[in-house]
Image (cartoon, rainbow, N blue to C red; front, side, top):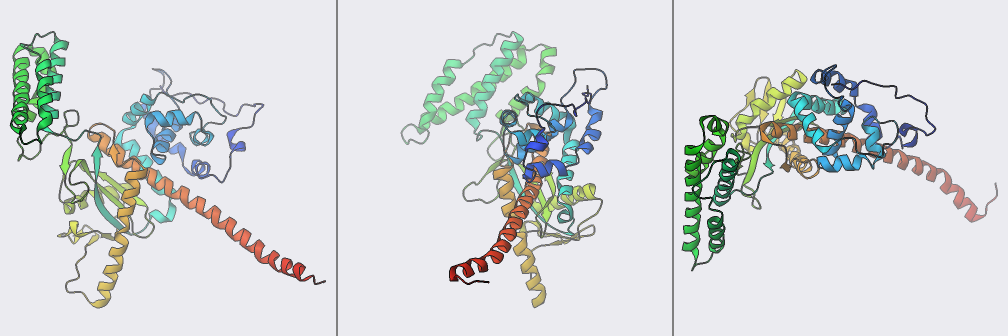
Length: 446
């Protein structure tokens, strides 16, 4: 149920947060610039008018989600820090200081799932709107990166052991007696696997690995025979996943790397320090000169970069109802020259005049700036490791990271504007008062 708006303008003996805080603080300015009413009108449809417990205010929940990615915090940390930070509370719509946590951390999960991808796209579009003219350039820069999922480094042994544990759990839950749980056997085999790099005991380790795989397959077949028809339908998805993991080989494509995140893919980007990344591919689009992120798309498949350009431009057209004139990309996009009304520019100097080569070189020098922007997204706004579950979680994390980057960009811009103003102010004072000091030192009279 949607919470009723009460009278927030009641008289108090204390002053409000608006009167106490520094009005030049970037978070204070950002709170004034965001159109919060837009979110309240859009998200009202997700609440019932009369039934259910009154929910938390929409501005509070949206503000917490934005702050989480701006400050690179977890759900638990942002809820805890909110009760200590007055600027966080003012940003989320509080008029006076509240010495308590605003909600449970799990409520942020429920709210994100409630508003879905459509609601997060609205937050992203608001972040572009905040940047004003900077986000309305006609030329864009496009590149792809990998958003890693929060999973352990996948190995066959880990997956087989997880299958064994999960089948035993299902059997206990359904009241089935297995022929053997293999608990002690798996523990003993795990000790033998420690010596797989030793020359003398490598064969023993390899034999132990094969034995663990055999046990996993034996347990899956055993539980499939003994489950009732009703229980088998309930656990059919999990059992099919277990079978697929046991059947897969090293050379196979579309392998399973995680039991709880089966959509994870192994992506190689040619990095020396990290040859393989396990997650999903992401397309990032930003304006050529100002560097505002105007497109953030999560891709389900590990496609060639040139095939990701069309869905990225479709997302841009969906958001802004127009197409960019030029899209500058690297050699990963070679092979395509035009999509719709957008010209695709890649580093190709064949058959060009000297002036055209200079223009192309300058545009691709500017293109390389997207690498630094992607680095900021990963290190400062939670794109480096995605903690949200399933494919919808991939889409959520990309949109929120890009929105946080745009909000943070404007916060830095306002902060720099204040610094420049103060520098000019003090420099003019210095110009006025330095001659007077010189005259006083010379002891000259007027």
